[in-house]
Amino acid sequence: MVELGRRGTGQPVRPIGIEFERSGPSTDLHDTFFGCPIRFGALRNRITLASADLDRAFTDYNPELLQMLTPALSEAKQYLEVGSSFADQVQAVAGGPSEQG
Image 1 (spheres, rainbow, N blue to C red):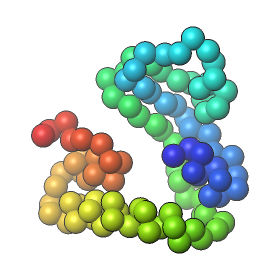
Image 2 (cartoon, rainbow, N blue to C red; image 1 turned 135 degrees about the vertical axis):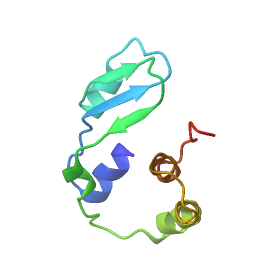
Image 3 (tube, helix red, strand yellow; image 1 turned 90 degrees about the horizontal axis):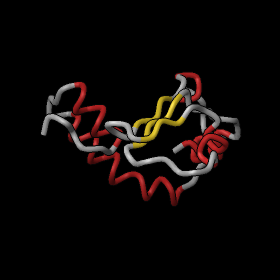
Image 4 (cartoon, helix red, strand yellow; image 1 turned 45 degrees about the vertical axis):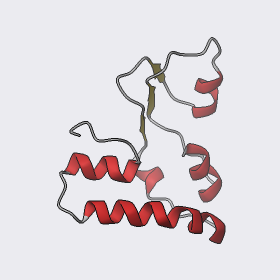
């Protein structure tokens, strides 16, 4: 996601923080790549981005990428329209499972 944002906007995208469920590596490769604190052994995978980074426009149009993403985005949109909770909506857009079932 971070690299997609970097390449798509042509600007640096630096997360505020990242959490991984899995245990950490013995190198600082992740810290260097993401440029932010990395926490391993978290309860869930999470990335926190600044709203300014999320508001950046992509500089190019990629029809192949759009074709790949359209089915997943359409499914997420349908899920959001059934009156689910805010937490369920965030999970649907993020592509993760809901904790509430």
